[in-house]
Amino acid sequence: MLPSTKLYHIGFGRDDLGEIAPTLALLSGDPDRARLIAQQYLREARALSENRGLNSYVGRLPSGAWVLSATSGMGAPSLSIVVNELVQLGIRTIIRVGTTGSIQARVVPGEVVISSAALCRQGAANDIAPVEYPAAADPFLTVALAQAARELDVPHHVGITASVDTFYEGQERYDSANPHLLRWLHGITEEYRRLNILNYEMECGTLFKMGGVYGFAAGCVCGVIAQRTQSEQIAMDAKGVAVERAIRVALRAAEKYLASQPMA
Image: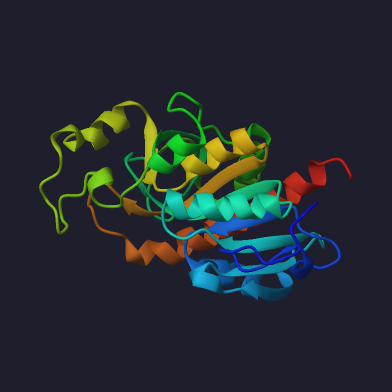
């Protein structure tokens, strides 16, 4: 039985979702991105909660299907809480819509990365499953994301993501309050580059492990807003395009994926 009372962190319950509850959520780290998706891309959108900055909205895709646009917060610990509570309310498909830094010269700001799997270096994930447990996206959802990108003519890359806990030290940034990184982090970006890892981000590894353990379909598409072969800084001039592309790909993929599922 789905909880009818409001869940503690996300601030809403099953009774708030309406007669036909969504089974798919678009999950953004940034509450403003969750709001943007709801207000500019969904129909009949309404706010469910803005509890703890974890803004959540419900609305319809152009196909008419109801979906959530929710906020995970920054990093895997916050995401793990939100995902657990969304699954309690019947969510069975989650697409992370994020931003990312490329570590490959061929992956440039403004493009998108669709993560097929993650090198998962996250403490939260270790509470979900052992280190050896694969952090893999749902293959059918990943194909839907790649097909959506092709149909929309969005420049994209599909591959492995390094999903780490920290933005500065864990992504080998020296231009910060702590330029003295631990020895094992020196050269980690080049090592990952040689392993054909495409990018850094901070949530999808834990999301993928949760999908495997909990039994829901997890996918991830991120707009590229930094090119780490050139600079540690965010390419702000490309951010708007990158985010808009990631959102459009996620929405098209959501429609394709839901259409492919058997009727309940």
